Length: 216
Image 1 (tube, helix red, strand yellow):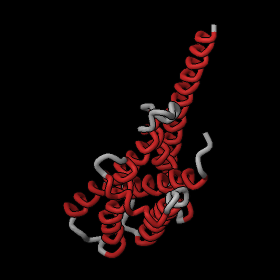
Image 2 (cartoon, one colour):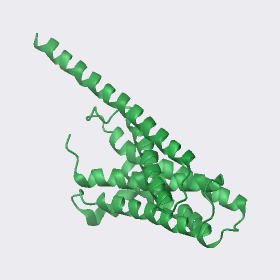
Image 3 (cartoon, one colour):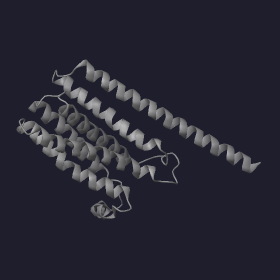
Image 4 (tube, helix red, strand yellow):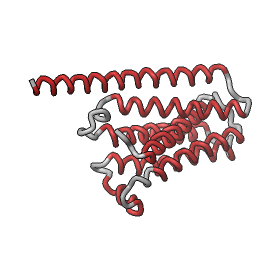
């Protein structure tokens, strides 16, 4: 398989952005991160930048990029359409949460909780839909398996954690607990990826054996 570089950039950048948003909002909701405007600006700014870069790059491998908007109308049958719609919708609650964090730190806790939960669900759902764009392709056995969504979600969180860890370190706001959590997320990603590659190896080994048997 030789996927287009724009596809690699799309999945990597947008996944890291959604993972960063998920961790930022989760940490803030549980009081791990204070309503510090500098962290809010840098965290949400980095996340939105990564997501926008990823979404823009996803149009580069289309035959007619100017018609990309039409894909949004096929949401009943297309994971690509669902991913595009959710990606746009997710900007609303996450943007509101970021604005409240930066400019209105005294916002009602119950209101922030509702907005925050909606943001978390949409971030996770968007990454899941991205994974299903590939996992639903039955002709590509390396993608059409249960490990693909798990890999996407785990890698989104681990790359988001790396970004957040870097931001926190640059601002001297990091803690050992978050360092350990980042390492744990990376290890989980490595384990899931190991099982994914093991599944692929077994799959192709089995196919090769079947081909030999058919020749015999």
